[in-house]
Amino acid sequence: MKRTFIHLALLVLTLSVGGCRTSSEQTETQAGSLSVTTKLDSTAQASPTVPAPEWTKNATIYEVNVRQFSAKGDLAGVEAQLPRLKELGVDIVWLMPIYPIGIQKKKGTLGSPYSVADYKAVNPEYGTFEDLKKLVQRAHDLGMRVILDYVPNHTAWDHPWVKQHPDWYTLAGGKMTSPLDEKGKPTGWDDVVDLNYNNPDLRAAMIDAMTFWVREADIDGYRMDVAGLVPDDFWQEVRPTLDKIKPVFMLAESEGDPSQFRSCFNMNYGWAMHALLKNIAKGKANARAIDSLLALRRKEYPRWAYQMQFTQNHDENTWNGTLSESFGAGAKAFVALTSTFNGMPLVYNGMESGLNRRLPFFEKDPINWGTYADATFYKSLLTLKHRNRALWNGEAGGDLVKIPTGRDEQVYAFYRQRDNDRVTVVINLSNQVQSIRLGGDGYAGLYTDVFEHKPMELKTGMTMTLKPWEYHVMTN
Image (tube, rainbow, N blue to C red):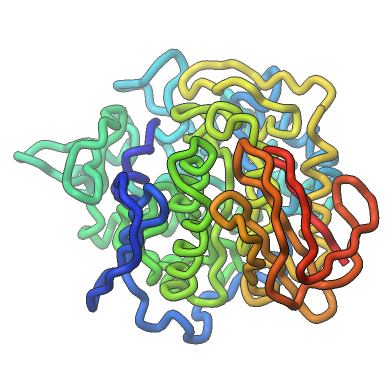
């Protein structure tokens, strides 16, 4: 189902450029054509209360749209490709919802995977519970992890709870209602019904369902759908319960509330950065705006927090456009940028094969894998993430240090260093040739260009000429 407007509720779009203004509760920064409103976290630099598992420190994440991933669209089709994903450099396999889909008010032919009819069962179109256990075990054997997409905010209209526990649902005018957004406006998700988290019995049942998959299928965590619509005190209940079974990794589909990093979550979505980068690609903002947004994130987020950086995901691909539609000729430049930023890079299924169409949400239209034309490109970036500690996640990695170029509205250059490991990135984020001179210090030295496999020496004051959308990712 379409969730784009939730993101817009979190990211207030404007057409102006400006600085920052603060109040005691909020900070708003305008990054190019994007204004981002986020709560401030008064304990942003405190010690982590929900530490990420050790295996996440240099992890990458890959989203699987199970329905479209193989010709049959089942879990066995995903398991069969796990060795290839391991070779690509994937660590965390995120499965879109695998649960039975509601029939009542179903959208399209097959319905939305986010319309859940049973939280403790596998969609028979995808296989069986044993198929999921086999997939998870195979992933673990390969040194990978599996997280499930979970939908805590609402159920299908024909979920058994609707008749068994009507008091577990939100009422509007005495009737059950589809979800409302953060501003109390209709979402348009009329195939689902909103849950009422004021009811303690609902909370207990939801936690029971969440623990089920960790305990019985040995999954490694969750991506929580529209996590910002669920009360934060519920997340405070969830995390210790799950961690008693095993240390889990938790991803929030949310960005606006840094306190979620203290209550439950290890990583959230870099929605604001994604929207800004799309605006840069379309000439609606310039590269300087990246610094404003990064400065805000450093101020409001704990140092240990991860943001998921991405150019595509299921919502973006289906509703807003393919990689080429969103980023045009500069697509790979923006992938290189988001793969080397502070944060964990996401690869959406099919990108390694140059996915050039929108995958439908309610119908079957499997990915045409072809020859995996872009696999080497993504493998180069994900392998670098593993090997070079400068790019590791959170406090395990190095800070991003900006390199002045004299053309900072068009070119974004930076380095990250951790101990003796360093990565330097220079990217032309424009459709024009740019001549630059590197300023600052701290990055001089000998490197290897990750894509060209050629030695390169960087010096302060050196000049470079970059073709439109040209990118260099260099490792020492």
